[in-house]
Length: 335
Image 1 (cartoon, one colour):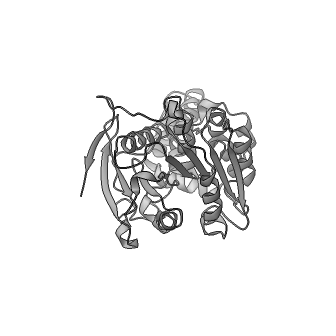
Image 2: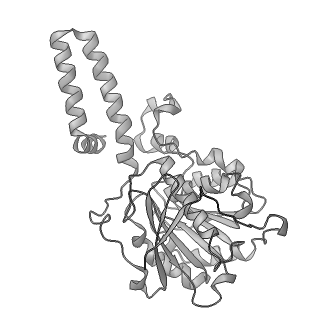
């Protein structure tokens, strides 16, 4: 509780100070009831605004917005790309392709967690690239790394759709084998993308790791405030209602949880697995894995490989024939 208040006061001190000063002036000139009303509304505004500060950490560590590690540091061949989303923001991507046969193998779209940037995931990505023999498109959300804007739930969904639209316009990858991967917050983004009607028949498979059922559920677990059980949904600025959306996910899905994850309880992974609407779905609990290092567990890569080996081909009748129009994302390559 103390750390929560410290973050809010430090990051929103101007807003909080205005609320306190205006409440004091109203108390002096107009009376207690009006001052109390303004104070309560102001505090609600502070808490509502602070929700972004408690969820998104693009500046952790402090140089994350200016320095993004490149795949070449891991001897990975890559393209450095920026695309423009439908709402006008330029976001940063890395496309890491296999040197041979890259247009006949799966391509993973990698959605990272809520802190840092995509370059900090390259150790894991390098192993995925070599062990699974796949192409990987890393997505850097708005407000993260070298991408423009500031993060929001709607904005991150828009970024994910833009990245998906981009890879579906590439003729040098197998568009019938697009694989979504999301870790933690990235899992919620992948679930949203897979649950959309316009995408369902175009996504080959999905893997989500250490992700949650919803932000309101996480708030109850982390804050342990009884009042949160009674709080209406509209009071939550960020919702990420993944459990509800899993009903609409028909894509073959693998849910991975670390058994020692102290941030997102593994039971949430089981709930997502049970609710998933896909005919082919698996649940894998990695012994000893915590929230940030489940990918280092012994059976991690073999579990993913076994899942991918049994994912059926997309039927010819729904094989993605993707056409672009004026509303699709604009593509800008940076060499």
